[in-house]
Image (cartoon, rainbow, N blue to C red; front, side, top):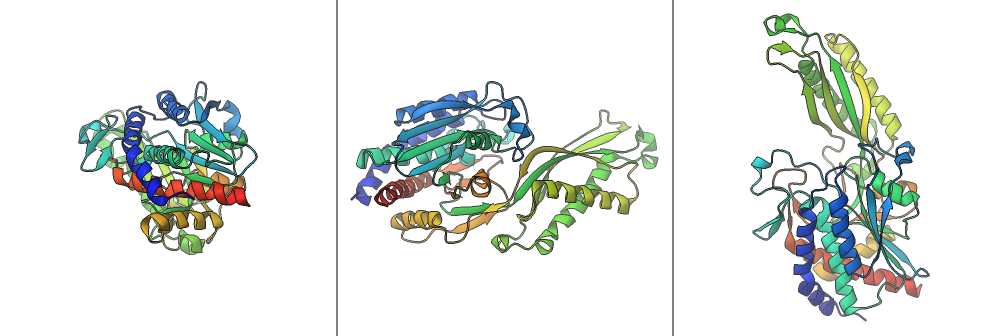
Length: 420
């Protein structure tokens, strides 16, 4: 029987190594198409933790998969990183995380450069420190602590996947799943404030090109500015999203005040201060109900746009809508699932109370496992701040606390499953 005190002591003793690993991850900028450096950092750490490591190329044809998102750039020279250890004849578990991060535009607003990891007041700051490179540090810390206290704990197959493109398509995890990187269950190490994240809404990315009627600025009052029309579309679609919980009720997401948000992630228009632009492009992220497929969601959004245009009367032509990235279905792990119960038990052993169980108005790669590959999956990870924002950070102590929970979970998983 493994002593919880001994396990906690091992985690505490190895924590600084985990923080240094996280710093190396953050210092490797890994926006879409630029993941090679961070993959090397992660692969080296897996190898040092006793994993057999391989880089899994992503085939270009993944974009034709019915579950895929719209590809952002070529997959040539890009890969997922997979570590394997343990024996093949016992129970299996997959740890999953994503190595890609969102861009860090406007670095002048950061307290320190976004890809220069900085510790301050118990946190580590940097793009990706929170979402979600901290999860890799937590996972490696848990495994190394178990190796110290319970060598040979992995009586079956333990895999650790570092995927790319979670932030825009999910095609990294999808590709790995199609290649057979699956297990009896999966734990996605997304930041959850040490709670159990069990589900997410559907998410779709669309580009909407709006054409106006250009003119010299002196005639702006007689022109049709497409930027103004973009505002009309945005307001109309926000109202449309607000009524979706009533149109498609889902008890799993009833706790969320605004589950299906519209976000304008970007807008581009114009080439001259004194000219009314000819057109404008809105880059939209739209949340949608779990009962809809991505295809149905796109059709409904197109219909909503057409209705807004018809009601307004100022649009010279119908906007052109193009799929641009995410085509992610909503998902939810069933209440009371044994996987959730196992993680909750481990959390109680460390913290003396049940973890918060919740769902989110976003998505994670857990959707593929739950929806499409018959693999139960949940998310569990550290406490973070300002994800996708200025001065993104992670509470370093939460990496330690989370590793203590994850180590117990892993030990119980293989011990219990091995005993049958």
